[in-house]
Image 1 (cartoon, rainbow, N blue to C red):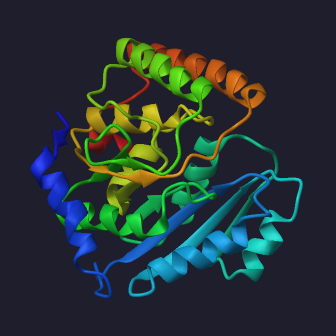
Image 2 (cartoon, rainbow, N blue to C red; image 1 turned 90 degrees about the vertical axis):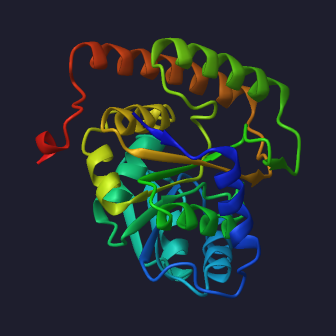
Image 3 (cartoon, helix red, strand yellow; image 1 turned 90 degrees about the horizontal axis):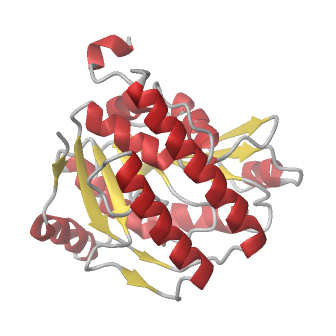
Length: 267
């Protein structure tokens, strides 16, 4: 069963980064994966901000271009990404993150959104949690210490609530926020989890947590601060429908035994 870091420990992890600015958080190499689709307008700035926020750490930045029809990949290379992976077609965030995990060389693997809705210094909070012994550290917008710089749009707010409640029924996992775009893993945990990954779209986060729970991994939740980048309703609605469909697939595959709970069976 997943071991949750209780509020006091979560807060200590969160606060420790605030009081250790300028100091190296870990000696480990950290792979930062940025799944990107049509991200040419932001990729250069995002890479620069991550390097600045993590200037004391050993990092590699992996940009996974998820079938963009703009110059996301070329701009990522110009900006100094350590690896740029180009998928031939737009498959979805889950597929992009899996592709990044497959080439990651770090002892820790973190993914975050290319638009940096989560200010990149928060990656250090994730690293603290991993250094403290967690297999998986997830940001939680529902944490009592989390902060929002802008309000969540109405469609997104209600869609998120409905999705969370349906997910809790279909795929019981003890986490109130499955979809936070800031997550980190030890390399060993990432390989075990993503070896079983089947979902290409946004619901892959649910699959990640479900598989981690089956593998009895230690999962820590930390607070986040974020600035919402609002999507249009036209994009949000079909995404929500696909996410619910994918959650149903996770449920079905679980019943059929497609996910293993034994690390020894993963090879």
